[in-house]
Structures are given as structure tokens and as C-alpha cells.
Length: 78
Length: 126
Image (tube, rainbow over all chains, first blue to last red; front, side, top):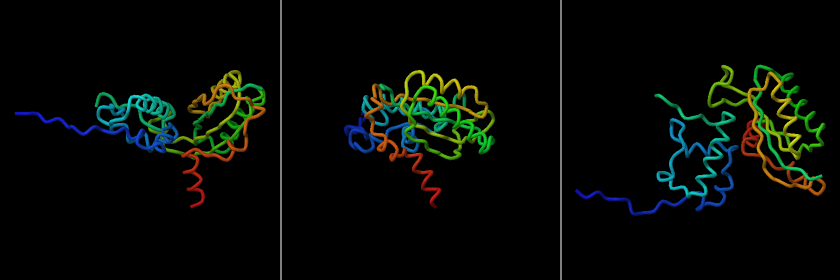
């Protein structure tokens, strides 16, 4: 059996949309919510397709939002 | 004066009432005054549901302030915030290094609002 790999490359949503990139901030939890799982973990970029540069920024902003309880910390031991 | 641009988010116990919040704001302004900081903007984000429990509560009153100051402004403000009982949490973030406060465009900073600030204003209008 041959395993088929996806051959279409994912596009970083922040590189594709400059306005979206400008909104990438811990004060905008609705946007950050799209990049965390239902358990609160940060979605890896191999899944979300975010570029390395914006993944670094995204992770930083998610952590800032967590610190002031705008976003949950990851649920463990469930 | 050469300053830095900071923003601080403060979570106040919603059960503290108006008195409690006034005390918090007085403390913040006291820190600014002592260290010649300049308040650029204060936003009230209202009472929001928190993502996790803080002192047994799932709600907090959020305030946001943008200001110009130095390291001593931050130190003094965080000291005062730390000794105020009604404060659940706070977070200071450095936005810009080396800002000349004499030539800074204060009006532009005043008229801007963050996304969370805007959403609260919309609710107030509706």
C-alpha cells in the first residue's frame, strides 16, 4: 500500500495577510484561540502552517495572554 | 527625558467594588508621579471571565494602562501593585525602548484603543 502525502504546501496565514499579522497580540485572545487546541496547547506549526518567524511571535503572545488569564494554560493529566 | 514606553494590564478583584478600583488607580498614578512617568492612556476592559481560577474566582476586573517611564517607574509601580490586596495579577510589557518624552506624540497614543478596549466600548454603547 502506498501512503500518499499531501503535496500542497500550507501557507502561513500571517504572511498571507499583513493585517492579520498586525493583530497578532496578546490583547486579541479571539485570534490566538485559533492556534491553541481545545486542551489549551499551542498548535505545532507543522499542523497550522505558520511560518517559523510568526510561530515564535505567536508562542510569545499566547504565553502573555495566559499570564493574565485571557487564555488557559494547558490542561494536563486528563 | 529619555524614557521607555510600557503597558500594564491589571486584574482587580471584582468584589472590591468602586472603592477598590479607585485605590488601584490611585496607586498606579502615584508611582507615575513619583518617578516622572507620563500616563498616555487608561482603558477599562470591564469584568471578564478568566481562563482559570484566581483566588477562587473565575472573574476579574481588567484595566490597561499605557505610559512612558523608566525602570524605576516600573519598579515602583510593581511594588505598589504587589502590596495592594485587591489586585489579583498584573503584567508589565516593554513596548518601545528609548522614547524621548519631550517630543513624543501624546495625542496619537491617547486616541488609539486596543481590541479589548474597543469591544468594551461597543458594549457600553449598545
